[in-house]
Image 1 (cartoon, rainbow, N blue to C red):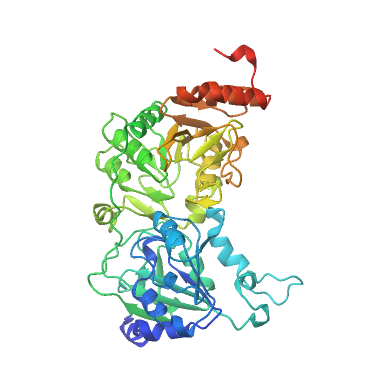
Image 2: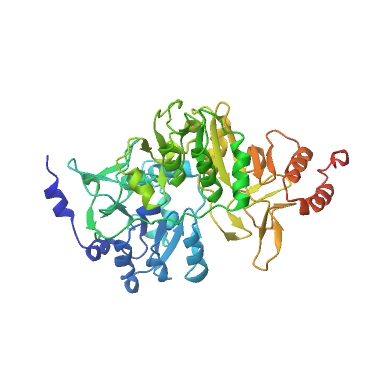
Amino acid sequence: MSYTKDYKSKLVSADKAVQVVNSGDVVDYGFFNGKPVILDKALADRAPELRDVSVFTAVTVPPSPEVIKHEGSFIYIDWQWSKLTRMLHAFVQPTYYCPILYHRGPFYYRELLTQDPNENFTRDYRSVYYNDPSKKGTTKWIAMMQVGPMDNAGYFNLGPQNSETSAKIENADIVLVEVNPNMPKCLGGNEESVHISRVDYIVEAPSDQMLYDAPQVEPTDVEKQIAQNVMKYIYDGCCIQLGIGGMPNMVGKLIASSDLKNLGGHTEMFVDAYVDMIESGRMNGSKKSIDRYKCSYTFAIGSKRMYDFMDNNPALASYPVNYTNDPRIIAQLDDMISINNAIEVDLLTQVNAESSGTWQVSGNGGMWDFVLGSQWSKKGKSFICLASTHTNQKGEVKSRIVPQLPLSSVVTIPRQMVDYIVTEYGAVKLTACPTWMRAEKIISIAHPDFRENLIKEAKKMKIWRQSNKK
C-alpha cells in the first residue's frame, strides 16, 4: 500500500501548521533532538496574536527556541534542564522546571491527560495548565516534534528520542511532525516510530537542518581519578548505565581500553562512550538477561559520529522511557552498574544532583530510577560521583561534601537510597549504615583540607563518635 497520497494531503507549510495554536493552548515540543526548529520559528512569529501558550520540552538543545523570546505570549517549561535552559532562564525570560519521575513520563500522558466524564472525580490533568479552567474542553494539547522521513510502510522514525513520544502522540488533540532528512533511523525496541495515520500535519525541514552535535569535553584529572575509582567495581558481564558528564564518559573510555569482556548496556541516555565500548568489542550484551546482544536506551545526545553509528544499527534498541527506566525492568538485569553525577552531598548523605540553592542546574531525570533499579538488581550497584571540591565565582575553593545542604537545595536522592558515593579520594558504601558511620565514611573521601571542619560539624550534629577520629 502506498501512503504517498496521505502524505501529500497532510503536507503543509510551517506557517499554516501553527495556525492550529490558540491563546491558552498547551504546545508539547519533542524532547532532546526532537525539538522542532522551523515549527518553533513559525509559532514564535505568531507571538503578537497569542497569549499564555504553555510550551513544554525536555533538555533544551541548540538552536535556541524562538518562542522563549516572547514573554507573555509563551510560558516555557523544561522537564529536565540543560546548560542552554539555564542561560535562557537567566538572560531571556523565566523558565520553569517540571519535576517528574522520568520512568512515569508515558503514564502522565496516557493516564493523567485522559478525560473520562463517567468518573466521579476529575482525571483531566490538562486543566492544571489551563489559565482559565472554565475553558476546559476548548483548550487544545498540541504535539510538535522532529521525525525522520516516512518509510514505505507509512512510518516516521522518531530518531534518538523515543522517551515519552508515542504516549504524547496518543493523547494530543493535534499532532504536527517536522520531517528532518538527517534524522538517524533508530531501531526498536518498541514505540520507536509513528504511523502517518496518527499524524495531522506534516512539515518538511530544510536539507541542511542537522541534529545538535554536542561538543566532546575532555575529562579533568579529578574526573579521571573518580572514574578509576569506579572501575575497580566493574567486572566481566556487568551491565552499564552512564549518566551525563565528563566522568561517566571517562568510565566508558577506560572500559574501551581495558581487557573487560561481555559487558552489557542498558541506559536512559546513549552517549559517545557507548560507541567506544561497543566498537572496542568490550560491550556485546551477550550476558544480559533481557535484550541480549543489544544496548537499550531511551534517548541520545552526542556527536555526529554517534548519530551516524546509531543509524540502522541492530546492536541498539530504542525503547520508551517506561521500559528503560522502570526500576522493575532494571532489576531484571543482573550485575547492573549505575553511574551518575551529583552536585553536593551532606553529612547525612543526602544527595543534591540538580540545584544550587533555588537555582535550577539540572533535574532529577532518571537518576532516581537507576539508583533504585540497580540496587534491586542481583549483585547490582549504584555509584553517585562528584569531585570533592569546586571553585566558585569568587575564586574560592569550596567542599562539595557539606555539613548540611544549603537552604532550598533539592534532595534528589534521599539518604536511605544511597549505595556508593565516589570522589577522587575513594568510594564508600553507605547502604544500611547508621548516621555516625555515614558521617565517618563520607568525610573520609572529602578533600583533606575540609575534613577537620566537617568532623567539628558532625560533632555538633551529634553524628560523630570520638573514638572514630583517626
